Length: 424
Image (cartoon, rainbow, N blue to C red; front, side, top):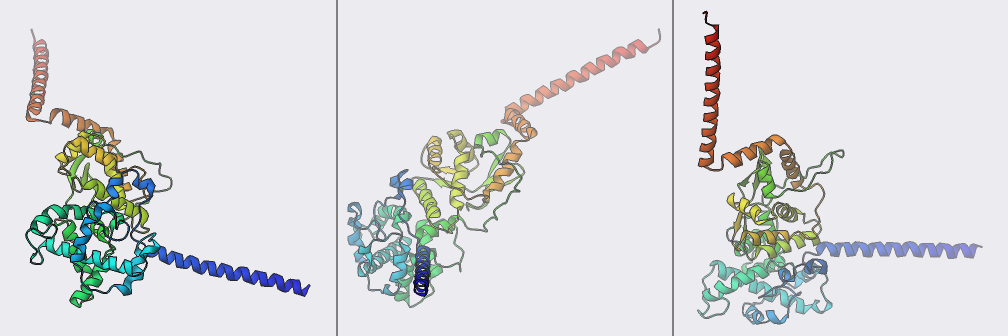
């Protein structure tokens, strides 16, 4: 009996030790997940628009390295290579890539990081004019002529989520080059100036961004983050966001926000304030990759996705785009208003929103305003009779004739009764 009890205790101890080992393995796996910041886009997302996630000119990092259409740029990468040590950060850099293949572990990966990092630094410096361009005039990439035609494609490829290079690489390269270790703000500013020269400057002292895509995201979401609104549990679910044309017919006016931050969306006094957005050939790919990053990176937030969903709900037709363009909110450089409407309508397929987001309160206020009949009647009056000076003059003339007719009638009646009241 004692022997059997010892066997049972031994089995129990083995199970506990196995559970402890599994828990330690789970903790290690969770730590590895937290290091991820560059992801392979799942097929369910990529199949909606494969071109939006496919680099065209240059590969950065291992995911698209060696693809035939990107090989011509590799020779130019090696021209900007110099000896720099990032070996001590290799584990962190490898951890940034989700699902990195075993073939990339070790020296090959470090060499790739150094090569791509040096190339990116050289392109950004040369294109920004920070350093004198002493390349030959016929250089296919780094000359003024080469940069003119190559940089727009490099910018676009730098915003592909599968084509990201950790900015930690640039930090280590600059530390070797300059001897300075505090380069976070310099790198963030350099990358943003290259990606979007007219963007609002980033806040300083907030740390090095993960990669170029996050730099752009920070620039689009600058300013204080609105606190999420928590509706009472007993409040009924609200209806969908109306289109811009429906809101206009209900009396809502559209006004350009004072900033271009995607967080700067407010509704007050019947006016919906929206940040300006320039819609061009790169807008669709940029927003899709930003949304994919928010979807795949835990803790990134949902702000770009919420903005895209809000705009998609408002833009259903060319008429909606025209209304927003009239308010200088949408700057259309892709052609017809119908093309812009089609672009927005294709962005939010299979989108998942965080519950009770910051835009929910704007949504509730807009819909509450639209439900009041007086706002719709007043809007109908304004749109019908105050759209142009001629319609206003016609209304004024009609009112004047009506008043004169009433006054004449009253005068006639009063005169009639006054005559009857006089003594014979």
